[in-house]
Length: 106
Length: 127
Image 1 (cartoon, rainbow over the protein chains, first blue to last red):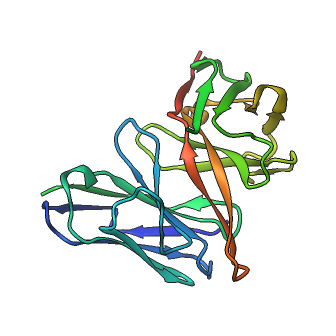
Image 2 (image 1 turned 120 degrees about the vertical axis):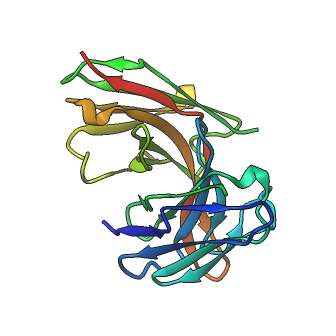
């Protein structure tokens, strides 16, 4: 199984901040990477697929980049509704998820 | 509008079998554009893929669960199901069913991801 490592595991930020979350794969996964947002008590919600494609209906302040082993999710201007936990997931082989990054209010 | 809804017992005894169903509305589970999957999340922890079922009935399972898990298609009901045998407390989790989009680009790039999820159902393993 491919190990997916996210950093940081948590961060504190303010509304309006630019936030960057990193995901590293244990081997090259090309662009087979997705990002999900999960709020407490809710199912995950797809934000980004194929490393950089924005899912329909997701605000443009979310963006993804990277290929190979290193990937980034960026929130350009953090909004109150963005406080949540974010997961990356690879689909190069049988799916594995990163451990998550919790974004909370500073 | 696509909806997925999990159903099944919320409490299962150790060593017994966990059985869940996912009812899909707004899409046909026989579409080749999609596959169908189960993902679970132990309380307070991260996400773990359990397995995936294609429209044709082919299955792929998490290697750590492979000997205990079965995912099946029930086309007449537009449902798919999960059974997990010989459960222990470590199987306590919220279980999500999800649609996997089999995505293709004209460039030839193919990938997949879970684009729609059920609300999840908590299954507790306890005597």
